[in-house]
Image 1 (cartoon, one colour):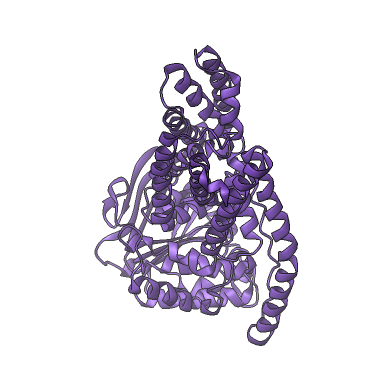
Image 2: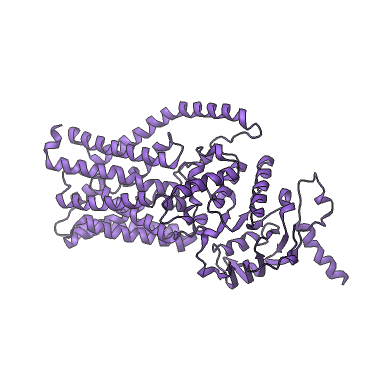
Length: 300
Length: 263
């Protein structure tokens, strides 16, 4: 493993592992509440942060964090109050964020569209020392929230109305989910890139669902897939000299297809076993075939 | 079975006074009064659009009240924090996430109100298992909820509400789309809860197998209380055994018009 001899690759791999853990860990709650594309929206808004970072010569990672957190909170408030006009407001926020990013980076003395490209699609060689520090701190926050509050976040994402009647601070938890998703976007930005972040939040979860029957298992498998593809993608990117973000995302989709192919016979066997077991104990009812709607409905 | 007037028990568990509510600009509740006292089983009846679901949703704070007062256990709803005392069973459609979840995982959500920071102790896991036992779903604890029938799913939602051992159960159409076998299990579960002193408010479309449990029926029409008293038994052939499709709201709605003309 000669690639570990290079400091930039050590940093890139560390960042990749953290992305592999955090993106699916947040993504599972977004998929559960059918907001699979929220990460994409935040990614667009974060571009303004990157642009501002260049313009003001501040760290683009921290600037992007600040702006995307702000954007995520705004999105949550729009979802809350916007009702029917909400999607128009969200569209303006997304495209405004993207346009702002392009504009600021071109106004910046040190910036050019080439800089922006590394943020949009990820880049290994540009992960700096300070980036790694920021990514570690932000990833720790994301892990703390997604694991520590898993029961609360599960309840709110599963059934918001019921969660409110159990006395959970639903609005605060929704805001926290949005903020955590925004933080994850900036964690993933250096390796995967802003435009592809959302794939790593959603696709591992969708792939894990092909095998799992519980939320806990989906969580674990999704994170395992996430770490595998981010490491695999980063290494491939190093040896083949291809962009890391695109490699990681294509690997993730490959994992999804492979697991789907694998899961079909597994599901059949399970259904047969369940039908056999039930025929003996519960002859009154037939089970309804699993009719879970796909998790890709948009509800940002 | 006690009747409404006999119960002079202490505090009202639910109290609505002159409650008005709008959805959009359309008035859905036009000043309703509703009191549910401790240990009572009250059915809220009415046609679709009569406001019965909205009335329940004002109680749990899902629909804002534009006038009037809502109190839970003697506390104004806005200041009420003791949510572990309230078990809510929503209409079945609301509890579907985009990620698979097991029966146990869903029922565990109902226990959160009894935990500190969502940390589960032994007693909490035991309470979840006990709630599943109550509705006869213990053998399906590890199955994903998507694989359940409508009736089984409803039983899971009731177990979720019971997991916190609430003093008050609020159920929105618990029998809608539920097969006969599950209806009987639900009725038996409810009977046990009522015997243990739980107060129950049910939104129902028809009385069905729960009829013997119900102390009092409140019938809504167009956002007003039309009838508040014993369950409308005098519904003629609709109440006959074997007639499985009862429409209590129709005759109840017709009655005042008739008396109004005669008196």
